[in-house]
Image 1 (cartoon, rainbow, N blue to C red):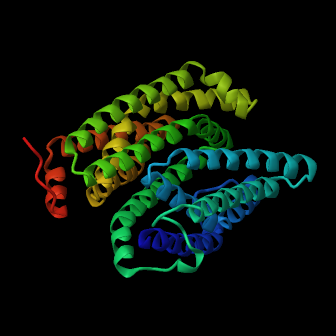
Image 2 (image 1 turned 180 degrees about the vertical axis):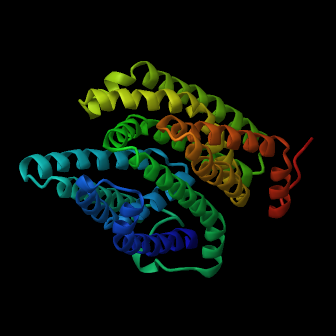
Image 3 (image 1 turned 90 degrees about the horizontal axis):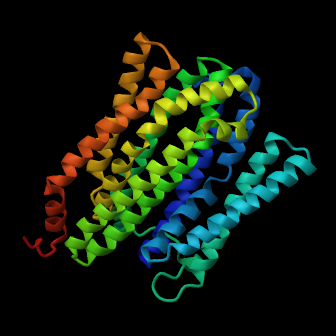
Length: 365
């Protein structure tokens, strides 16, 4: 009960902070990333309206995390589907009917996030037992907050480092002109399903490992990682294959410019074959977080992906200045980081340390 109410208090506080920082720094960040003048005002408007929904976005994620921890992964999916449907309907209404343009698209996204947050809160308020949410009891518990932050802060730092490295890459992309920027955007939209799927496997393994580690069923912890890894690699591999084979017509959904599509296919060939190399990063780090070990996954990811990516951009790309060299930053950093994770996970010391730290019975040989 304390974890639920502390988590919700943290969601409100963190969401408010995200909103304030987003509204303040959006113009500066867009300038730092060399956003073309032709789209600058629209980009600023969309991003600032999007940040206005920060509290709703965090509440949904925290609430869905609570539900998954209780073994309910269906309702978060259903609520997200409702959110997407609302987003689409409002997009059509605001853009086509009201002629609001970019502002309408942003408003539709923010409103749909509010809907998902409200649905999550209503469900948590209707639960039976200790996990039931009482609005009047939403407050910080110091000891519980400390435990949440020990796991959450490293994970948040990891996400922040990803964002920083991606901002640097985006700045490099924008420097190659509007065609390249448009091609990269179309590619990102086409491949967004990769991130959704691999993130879902990461969330699933974190929840499953957490439950079995708490029950001291270490054999199921190890077996679940193998099964999840196999499922994720096969799934992401098939998705990557489809995007490579049918990349041109898929890109055509987002743009009709032949030059943009040609550039987009070059990006596809240099990034998409490496998507399977990202899978071990998500699965291994998710499994470790399930046992409460979030610091080492963060260190490995920040050094292997974020820091190495920055070194690649300012080193290799500065010498061989091309979009393709920029695209290779993903494959190179994913491969290096996945290899590091594999070595760290397979040596097994991390799990023994977590067992000892929790005071659990040692793993049977």
